[in-house]
Length: 80
Image (tube, rainbow, N blue to C red; front, top):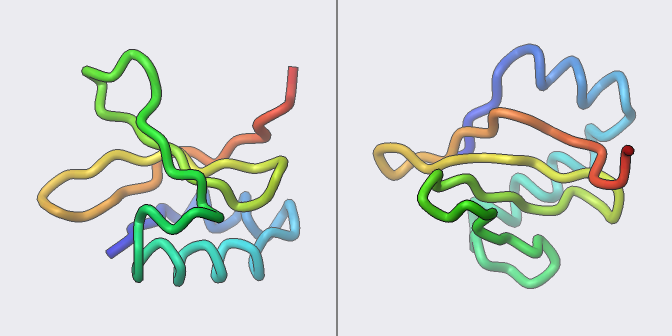
């Protein structure tokens, strides 16, 4: 199960990511390691923060707690 806060739902709408989010969410809930998601554990590893791809530009950052994934940030991967 993938949890998402209301502020992130607004971010998704603002950046026109609704379709991409739904596709990634469905894929993630079926198989967290599906190749197109590019799911990875980020450094430093001890923090337990993971990311998966919405598209080439946007990533969802999440952690796993009590066997549930909670997205805490959606980022523009290439923003400097």
